[in-house]
Length: 437
Length: 169
Ligand code: FES
Ligand SMILES: [Fe+2]
Image 1 (cartoon, each protein chain N blue to C red):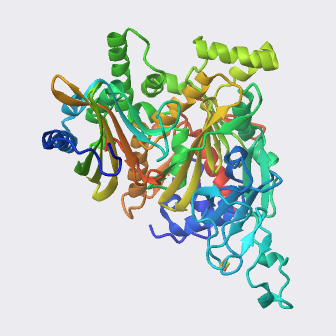
Image 2: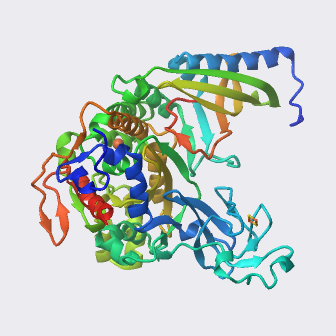
Image 3: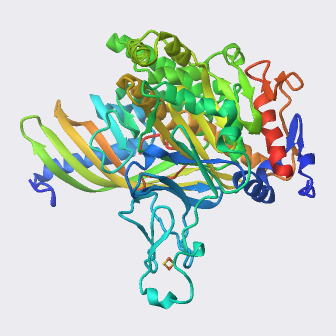
């Protein structure tokens, strides 16, 4: 079907099915950038990513290239990575330290970390023509910048809800749950970013994160292999295998288990999957974590913190967070069929080393460039995108599973079963709101 | 010993080491996994750091960091009938060169050998290129060299990676 409905996006999204153009059409992708990625809040990075003055990392908001950096007074800034002179990219490396100032490689204009112009060679050429403090000669700052518990967001729109309001209770929980697990109430980023390109639309990834039907099918081979290896390990060494094997073996949990999970849909498309991993066994690591938290907060609060049971929080449209394992994947849409993911993990300040090792094991097995888990997801995403890009063979994507059964209360949607396609419906209802403006 | 030139060792030793590296490339390209695994000592490790300046794989992020068990699991996984992402025709071709013996420890019979590799991979009508440096720590057991540690420094270690890597490079 040729797309003549571009100006009538409503007709592309029905409550229980959406048109394939939402994933494959470049014009719709452009409108997504404009209406979603340049309007909402986008995760830029964590404050601990730029610990020293002059430190910077570069990243993306839609197709805009951005810098997060720290100035000499310790303030963190988010800037457009663009020289006001002739438009050159200022930071051409992924990350680094700019001692004292950013220096444009073309004509050496220098900028402070807040974007203000610090120096220009041969200034006399501008005398009486333009004032060097003129904002048009500064590196532009993100229209808005706000931080929640160390997680820095930017919005390229000067209007809209505050970060706090936009995150709401549902998405704030992702960051609260990470930080609260630290006896100091803070986390610290591990300075390593795995960057993986998905050959698929950004929404396919987000939908997959809350798709409880797929794990035991998509990841069957890896789950099987891990369970086999656990036995071999035990037989040969007489010891319990490292926890990484269990992370993988869990992917082949029976359907009933996946069906017992909860998914919760919040305003603005933020969506939560309640946890399944049982990360509170009575092993020595968990026990020492309990002790550290009890010492810091008392037993009651420790219990409340460690019983928090979220597995994934999608901060729509830009993040997938796994708080109990201290990881996140930032979503950077580059084209309708191309998405960059930036994958990070965190240390909990003051928590036992074993808690970090758990996070690291998951980072390795599920999120590294050698992962035997996401390998199969990436293959599905690619195949999905390729299928959706075909002209024939049908026009619609089905989200019928448990449609009409989603309980709604105070704007919060829950699901009747873990396998319900309620999360996809929830995300698309926000998508439609963003896109209809 | 000199880091710049490598050791001047006997031609036999150089040849023996080279043959091992060529053989390793061949079993990988021919997916002879059990033979691959048998090239390593019982406590052998395959390690691809996540950054060039990494001194150890312990306690920090890596791209690959696998002992005998994890390598065995990876073999089970790629050969599993439901490993759908691995089902499409998948072929690789490795070339190993610039083989230099950098250190020989007479007491422990260990060698440190560096080399360069280039690999092309075909899948889904597409070619991917990988290149980089191998650093093998070899030990002579029962008259044959075995791999105690294989460090793989990928040239494009920062990525971004298209898809991910499923078998060893
Ligand atoms: S383009 Fe940046 S100084 Fe000229
Ligand atoms: Fe998956």
